[in-house]
Length: 299
Image (cartoon, rainbow, N blue to C red; front, side):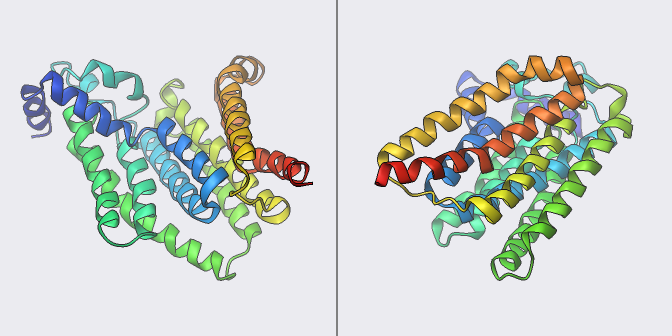
């Protein structure tokens, strides 16, 4: 049945539908979501950004843990007769179960949906289902991959929303969240070494990227809440400076630091360190720089 569904989607492909579903699937791609998070966090609404970021990292951590534990190959690898849309292959890395794009979409758009009301909430909650459908059409995931992401992602997003409410009401301290996040990051890193998926280090590398990003986000969150306390809204000049400096350093760390860290630490630990530094820069580094620049602009 799984193969028949994918073959049916393959049979209805057209250039127009290929383009349409590539656009839809991009809504769940990490590059877009990271960029959107940066803009929201640096410039608009820090509180909402923290909620979305926490939801995303919980989903990413669970997603990568399951991928590396079950180590299910992509459908076009398991069934060579299937032909995925070629343009979708660069983003189809790692193992198949569950769908990372769908999990990302549930975590981000679902969490945003908890924070708004009216028609916009409905639209935000429709997006993850469309992203899941796009993964089937493009031939890079099975129906099981997508359904598992939805079944796990929705209650996870709801749980993070409740946890954020408890934090906002001062029932949970930042240090407790830091310890919990670091414990989850370390568990995920261990899974990258010993779970069945670790047999192929290249396939499990996303596990180390995710664990490093979670650890960096947790440290950044604690430092920002405890010491930095930046204000997203500021003068137009400072907003432009934040965007330029923030994205420039982020790209520098993602691209230029890869060769250095991987050569010094190996691909797995190097990926952990690189994505940890990226998260730490986004959540605490750039806000700290902005905090230093603000008085100079207002004096």
